Each structure stands twice: as C-alpha cells, then as structure tokens.
Image (cartoon, one colour):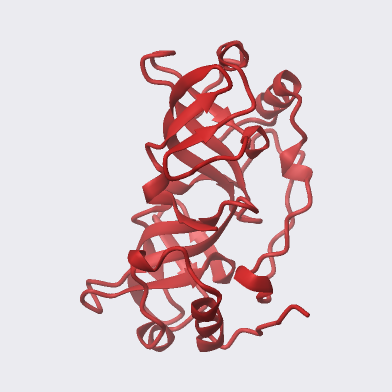
Length: 247
C-alpha cells in the first residue's frame, strides 16, 4: 500500500514485549530509493537515545496505529549505542547487522520500481554505488528532504511537502510537491525515479519534467490515499513515460 511519510511520523512502535517509542524518521538510499532504516525515538524508555531499525525487523506492521517488531526490548536496549546523525558509517551498520542478525541491506537487490497492479516505468539511470566508502554517502533523511525546493528542467515549481512510500517493498515511490507559490491550492505527485539529483547544500531537488507538464498533471489530494491503479496509469501517461502492463 502507498502511504504518507508525514502521517507515519509519530506512529507507536512495539517490541514483542512492550512499547519502545515512536517513528521519528525514515532513512533512505538516494540511489535506489529503498527505505533502509526506521529511526525510532525511544522517549522516556531510553531517554536521549534514538535507534535504527531495519525493515527486516517489522512483524506485520499496522502503519496507521502501531508498528510491531520481531525484536525484544532487551535486544533493542543492548543494541550498539550509535550516533544516528548522518552520515552513518559502514562499521556502525556492520555492528547492527551482527547484533540483530540482519542481512547487508545495502548490497541486497532492489525491487523493480513501479506502481500498483503491475504498472512499471523506466527509471532514470543511477550512478554506481561505492560500497567501500567508510561512510554511507547515499543514506539520507526523508524528513530532512521535506520542504526542499523542487526545480523542474526550466524553473522552480514549489517544494516537497511529503513522500509517499510502498509499505510492502519499503521504497519511496512519489514526492508530493506543493506548488502554492506558483499554482495556488495545487499539489502534484512526481515519481522519485524521475528525480535527476538532490543538491543537499542548497536544499534543492532536480526533477526531469518541465513546468508545463507539472501544471497540467493530475491533481493530487491526500484524501486520495491509498492510490488506485487508474490514477497511477493516468499520471505515468501524462508525463509520457513508458507504461508496461503485467500479463
């Protein structure tokens, strides 16, 4: 299901034996758009501490009300005490993998990007990863990118207001762009695979569409969630991207 990142922030998190905190952020890989970690704020339980939780630890999460983990409170309490500020080092990730028995998520195959009901589109080419870098240069905070300026191929079009993610594949799918300074009371969705890059120092996202395409794109409202296949087909065809139907 396609969910809103903003609505997920603050959702309660439960271990197998009790409450541990709430969702503070999601860390994603800006090359694959895979959600690599949930950042949990442990609040009064472990004051002043935030912990990274891999999607591997999710146990049938109910994103609307709470997220269940297949971990105990003791496992989380005894996890490596690490600084969750970015960048996260490879050594820190390796310590987490060793502690919890997770896989090396950053080396795992990335699921085929696409929409619901078997719709898929051709992604923009991604640069090669650098897995031996001492820090992970591609791991980013989704919460930080919300409010970044969005620049089309010919002009600015607004700012990112939210991200929509696929809670099955754990991938960011769309950026919800607020165009109010240019087109009053209008929000649009742009698939993240059509982003050409993120300028972190300038808090700016570049997208591979022009202003006219955005202006005439299907309007998006949060009340439309979860998205249906008909809307996604319309969106992909509008931006003139190849649409492939599953057989």
